[in-house]
Length: 286
Image (cartoon, rainbow, N blue to C red; front, side):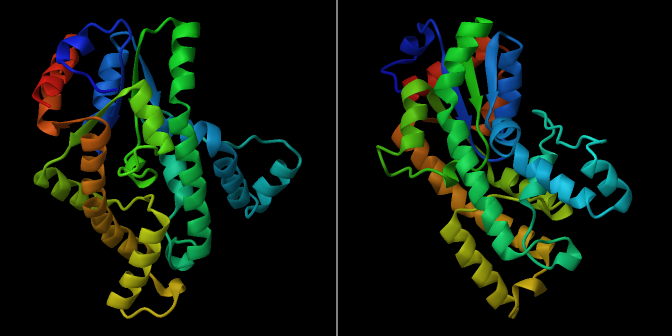
């Protein structure tokens, strides 16, 4: 959704916004704030983990449980029930399932298995983003919500083509919501890297980008076999590469399909009215 003026946005009876950007820029903070003021909050990561990857995540738990004789017997007799407990604030089951490629002795998974799970996540994210119109209607029809905010995952830019006006995901989102990219700062990027160094987490990569960076990492570290790669070592190095890869993609999305604000503007938003003021000013400035 593009507007001629901020006033046009203000005058909408039902407002819908998709916030996008890197981890930690304020997407979920804004979504949670607006939820308190009668906006329906749709979390893409939550949808991925509870709908499209729920069985894969739960099955992985069961495989680990089957390695323990005591749990194996109970599981085979249907005496215990195992599944993930994903919430908006705790996506650890999804993150853990994606895993990290490299030495299995150091907690990694094979590169082939990693790529399989990456493809599962890609399909799940695309489906979850295409579900936005359905949830907008559902929010109005069942719960009576007039306003809707989509809290997208940090990897949205990896599953779309910002240069394609007919990209199915971006077309769906931009036709139904205003796309608002929240840009981070150099200091924020450094913070993300340092935080990631202390606690490396699984990430999503575009397939071609992943293949290229996997080969580059092994070459830089003189590693011949996939099984010799340190999972955390690649995760940290790959994360830095990924941050630089994503920034121009998000800027293109904002340029071609939506609007862009600075993350420094987010803390000043304390209410629905502040949010409307911010978006209206951004539209007028654009």
